[in-house]
Image (cartoon, rainbow, N blue to C red; front, side):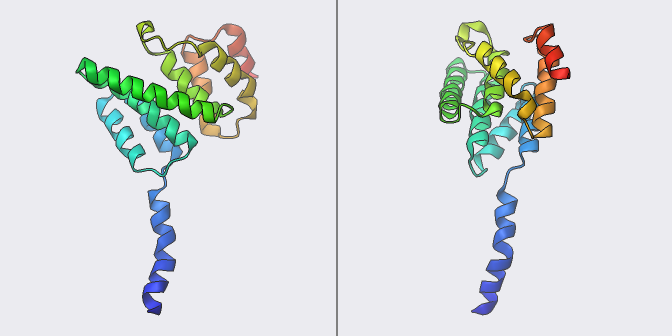
Length: 165
């Protein structure tokens, strides 16, 4: 009886750790998923098996929207996109001050066609991200945001200069 209990006490924390999702890896897959259907599928699959938190819920929603890009059936495309959109918006409403969620929405809204009617938060998300940029402690996230600001074409020169100080 003691032996199984000892195994459980020793291995249970390891099993829990194994199921944790590394945010760095999720971010990497997210970036790759825009160009790669395989990365997109892997991102959706990985996020399905992750324990949920606010940030991972946001990535799961964004992953559905990106999956729409790779779908060939128009009905499936629409379904994936709007499912992800509604989920991302709900997650942001519950966590409105979370910079990473606002950044996710900005990356989506800045890259989709206008006819989808999902570009209304670009300005407010830009302002929020810039206002909170220097308070971001996560170096990886800060680097990704900076790269987006420098390369997206959605930020003007004064905004770019602001983050370079």
